[in-house]
Image (cartoon, rainbow, N blue to C red; front, side, top):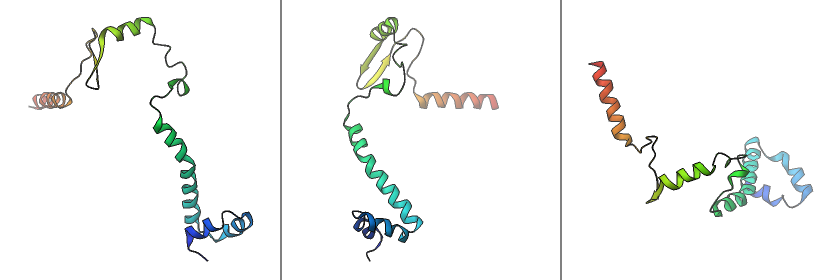
Length: 116
């Protein structure tokens, strides 16, 4: 008899043989074989997803585009720019891109002043 992975795959094509050999596998071998077969079935789905350039959000979230009315789209057209692969939003609401290191150092300085 072949060692573990080969004995499973050698008997997989004959139904009677695979059914009779199922009791020769240990729990670890059964779990490993199940995970292996499940991963094989997921490969086509991951390849299809990787080949897509965009994803339809309506399939994941119902009415995802409902809040985007004409006023929001006009706001985006007026205040949103994409430069060098980054989204820049110049808003009258005061939302700004902050440097995280500077923000953390300011917080640390303020906490040091409070402790002294």
